[in-house]
Amino acid sequence: MLKLILKKSKLFILISALAMLVSCSNIPLTTMIRMINLNPLETNPSEFIVAVKTPQGIAVQEGDIVVDFSFRTDDPNVSFAHSFPVIVDNNYAIPDDLKEDLSDDEKITIMKLSAQDAVTMSQGQQAVKAYRKKYENKGAGSMNVRLLSACRNDDFSWQNTELDVYLKTDSDDDFFLFLENMDINELDNDIQRRVNTVPNCE
Image 1 (tube, one colour):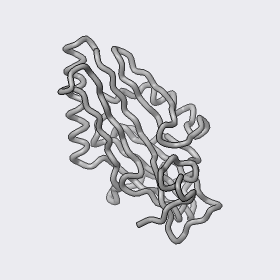
Image 2: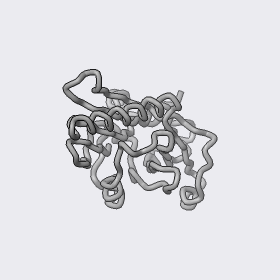
Image 3: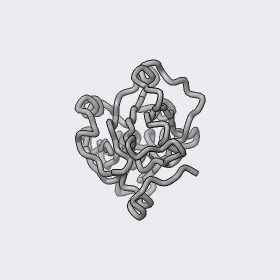
């Protein structure tokens, strides 16, 4: 998980593993550098796109990836903690740069925030901006992107269990690699922990 922290007037970036067991090797250095310059208050929620490259035997569905957005102050009327599950967008045209290295046994799944969640997140961004302007950048907030789980279908193979996650934070930008070679057997998912396996897709 990559966690962007807003505190006082500075933007901090922290790499952690609260929602999945991921080593730093799963997050490319170029991604870390790029995310340093990303301001979660300026990101357009309706343009925030997640692309997941998986083997044909693995699928990601609604709820498998979530975007967390929270802000904490002394005023409970301003504080909030949202967790938005991204949904599959079958109508999104997959760009050529993502398809270039796609092999026959791989596929790309495009995901985004629902229309309602995009509105809710945008309202939260505006509330944070107004509060920080009024109270001299007080309060602390965070934006997290978490890969929680994945499932398997009839084409699943235990020899091919890695996936890549790409992000696009603005309509004018290209996708960039967010997680590389993430083994779904390492996801910190309750179901997978209990049965030590990858669940079947419903």
